[in-house]
Amino acid sequence: MAVTLFLAESIDECREDSEYVHFDDEIHHIIYIERNKLPVNSEILYSLDPYGIELFDMDKIKQLKNVTSQLIQHNEGDERIVTFLCNLTKLCDIGIKQNKRILSLGD
Image (cartoon, rainbow, N blue to C red; front, side, top):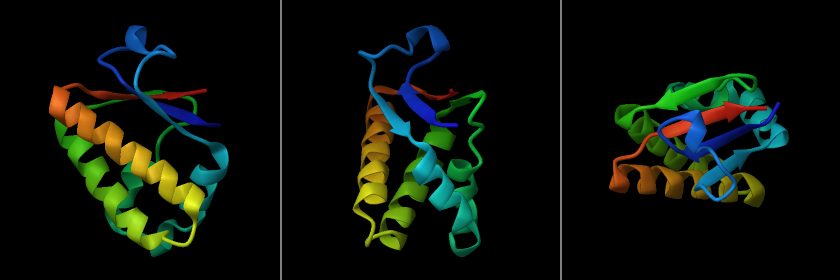
């Protein structure tokens, strides 16, 4: 049930040599279980379909970046989650800077 987030405009651009962040099952599960304690806008992250595809436009990338910043503060004690969130923040920064979208691709 993992999700990989690629810096891509389409599924054809999703390759191993692309910029990407892997959102593994365990981290997804932890964030989902904690969802009631998280900011409301965190839904953008924990509601990703692990079997589907979602393309984030620039507004959604900015929302995602905002959520990752909030969740980093919420999860300061869990190095694995913070590392994932920092990597996702960097992916968002690259997308914003290069004016590229992020594509969420489930297993």
